[in-house]
Image (spheres, rainbow, N blue to C red):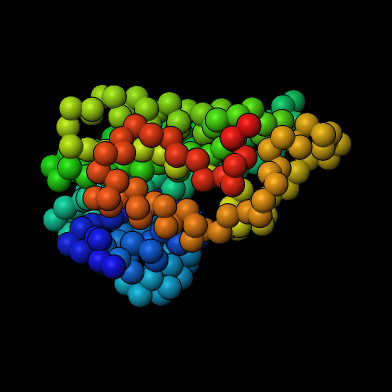
Length: 246
């Protein structure tokens, strides 16, 4: 398929996990892809796996860096059709153990980074009736013990997506969010639970099916970014194997 021939997509978090899988998928469907990430070596690996991908080293917590990266994409390729806010950080902690640095990093990447990139990308997306897709989480739709800052930031992404969708409801821009459950990524592989936790508090969000693969999320991202989803706007779409169904 070539659903994205002639289109330009920029993706944060492209060095690994969902970001890498999405870059590979969109490139395979004809898009010109530019990956944004703080991990330069990881971007090189994604570019090799995708066959062709532009790369910009960018810290999404830095507003100026987000705006500069988007402007570089448009300067290099003349347009921006799809922007994916995929970069994110996660950590499990007891509430009393959360430091100011822990909180600030979580908010800077998971909330501020999404907003700064959206702010930079939207003027260009409006010109082509483009698509903005944010990666939220099932943690933004349900309370989860030992991940209070993470839940707070992903809940912010959920409502930020809805608010953006309302602000641009009379334009051709589409804004949506994907809310995955657990996905087999380096973020999950390296995830550490704190000591002395009550596992019974976690039973409701462990899930009954296997974890998703990054390619599962990438496939849905590609659909949502394509013209086949032209009527999908302001939606928070769960891909969590039924985790938030009941």
